[in-house]
Length: 224
Length: 378
Image 1 (tube, rainbow over the protein chains, first blue to last red):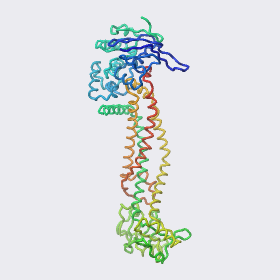
Image 2 (tube, helix red, strand yellow; image 1 turned 180 degrees about the vertical axis):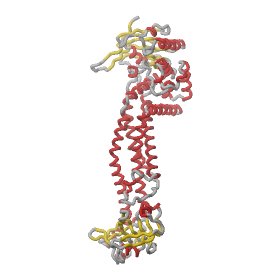
Image 3 (tube, chains in turn red, brown; image 1 turned 90 degrees about the horizontal axis):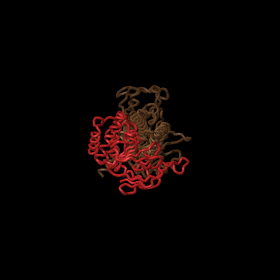
Image 4 (cartoon, rainbow over the protein chains, first blue to last red; image 1 turned 135 degrees about the vertical axis):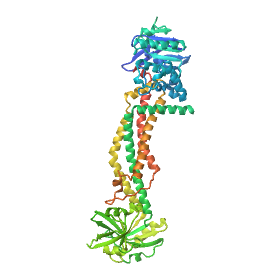
């Protein structure tokens, strides 16, 4: 489904502080699988995730989605693909403070111009599924860490993306909440959604919900 | 099209929610912004209405007034002067006028004594302006005495008080009988203050003025259009002085607005990053922020302008009347006819809303074009 061919990514290229986060990654990610990118800090996991999720473009190499090269697309097209194909759960959740849980969930769908009633129904169904219906009107800063993460998951699913991307999803959660997240992840796997996540938490990478673990170090894949 | 409208509605919804989230800051900005529009619009509306009022009043004035000059100063029209002018082609009517100023030490104000053209005031009576009647507590059939410049005391009975609607022109006016006028001011018989000429064809006014100047080199013709221009420039000047005095506050607002609009807080930058990461285009973020700027500036403009309209036309502009109206002692009380000049509104709109929107746009554009992956690294 997603294929990366000799992908490299440099930051501050040509400057004294030039840094290569990825130094030639070739990888194929299958659809309807849960894939975990594992590695220590600075190994390039998050950078790889941003390239896969169309948040950034590689410095060199190719990224293809369903056989279509997306590495050189202009920002507008990348945004369109990102909105339709990917849902993101960030490490810090990145919810918008001051807005309610349901408003945060609906945010990614605002630029699509979908009718409000349809959107609200979908958001409510997602909150219901994630056992957050009773907190729908609560401002996100009043929610617990676990609740905030579930709002972030609901937000990632509002546009019904094919791929869910989660960056260090359990980094800010205690064991109980991390297990809760894995249960949700398992349900996504069961319904055939593609999930790509980064983690170095054994609870995640050793979970039965994860179909494949890709190891990374120093911007390169590590052979299993 | 429907999706486009729905999208705009959602963007506005989000904008309103954003504005409410920063209630304190935005309400403060809105209040200062609306106050500025209020002040500028009040000055503009009031000065414009005064100019119009003056123009309406002067419409009834004679087309040409002829004054005699001695050593460059206004002097009385001697007997026989009217006859010297003789018949000028194009002049419909020509008559000598009698008027003068009287300083009343009781209220420390100057009155204008005038003999009406038809001399329709009965001897021993006066018709007074409403401001004067108010100051001296006069009403119909009240007796009043004035000491003339010669020291002699003259007593009159007030026959009538002029209507308040005419107050801009008649606040300090006293209509008096000709005989009484001449006696009160010791005005020599046969002399007049000036000569009023009415001309039927407006295109002929200048030619007639030139003829009069040639015929009577010791006299100066004053055209009605010159008077209108003088009044207009007087009110322009006053408006200008006021706006100059207000320029400090305008500048203060400009700095505040620029600072508020152009400086994005760290929170706002983070939000823009999140919106981009979750699928908003750069254009969507810019549109949303433009809606935000537009809502603030339009609301402030509307509030300020409606406030200014009520201030000027409903409450008589208590804040600016003393400066703009500029009457010496007897302040006229009158209701201005509500009048709005479209060009003036457009100018005010352009100079208040446009710079704010520009101030909003530049930093948002800069923040909105940043890479969305930055949010992953925050």
